[in-house]
Amino acid sequence: MSAFLALQYQDPWVEEYARVFLNQGQGIRDAGTLVSLAHIQIEWENLALKDADRVVFCDTDPLVLLIWAHEKFRKRPPELVALARHHRYDLTLLCKPDLDWEPDPLRENPHDRDKLFDLYLDHVNKFRFNYAIVEGLGEARLKKALATVDPFLKAH
Image (cartoon, rainbow, N blue to C red; front, side):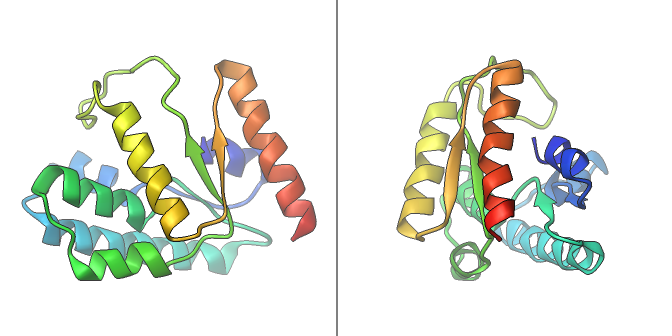
């Protein structure tokens, strides 16, 4: 979704560093590895901000890594909690898990997508993030994302 939006608005896109890390054959050994990945993700975002005219579209954020740390390792590293709470984005799009599951070597949770979505939703509310939920299939989903981002960009 974020790559599509970046292309649509001709603004920078920051891919998910954890995916790059895993595709290089690296493993996530513990929650501390996720803290390190969060710092690198933020570095990539900061680099992209230097080239941005308006906005940067990001595939992920520290909140995703915090929930991953908790779900996979039953840990909530304080540093990751702080990054998730305080590294703010102007707008977060939460993608509802209403699409069919697509297998991917890096995806682990085909059966608890609703539970994970609810965790993200709880956290964005608790942290008082500005967010919108994107749902629907195919073209309708993309139109929903554009209908959310367009007025946001016009207002800012």
